[in-house]
Length: 116
Image 1: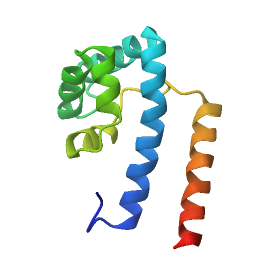
Image 2 (image 1 turned 180 degrees about the horizontal axis):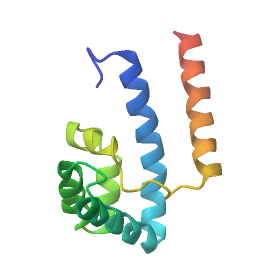
Image 3 (image 1 turned 180 degrees about the vertical axis):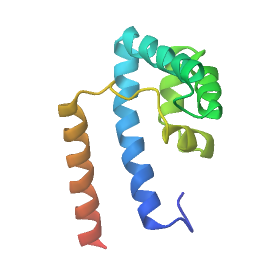
Image 4 (image 1 turned 120 degrees about the horizontal axis):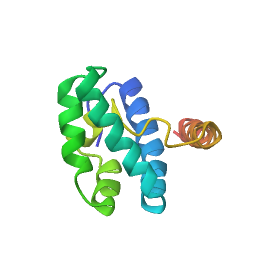
């Protein structure tokens, strides 16, 4: 999947995917997660705090049904990876949830590097 991509980028993308996988689960359980993401993307358009490309692309994704959006959040394709770089789901995870996910990710990465 990551052939020819520098390892730092692989690590960043993998972390983002891990975090967005947790966001996808929350999105399916709590309709407010989707509402807040839509509000944030609209605000990006209004105040220019994110590039218009991200705002437009995210609004297109967020117009879908929660299951479709959750699937997109965990997609490893190029478009999903690009959009996760500027996500309207910031704040969807608590600080503790984020910390737990990143710690688990770091443990797995460390275990894999020792096994290699």
